Length: 65
Image 1 (tube, rainbow, N blue to C red):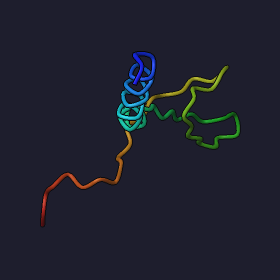
Image 2: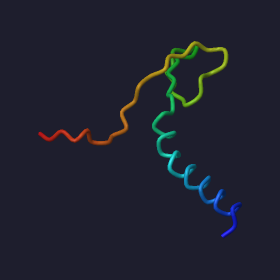
Image 3: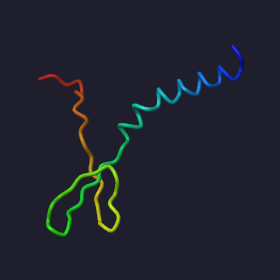
């Protein structure tokens, strides 16, 4: 294999390994519009004050009971 091919393979492997961790690091924003309706989204709305909220992934923490 050529050096260029090895570099491409290594880059692809690193990107694939990093993708799941990036998904868990995503932010979720909560805001209320002028009609009093609460919204949630992955992007902070423009022109609205929003708070960042923590979400549970649904994965088991390993505790039994």
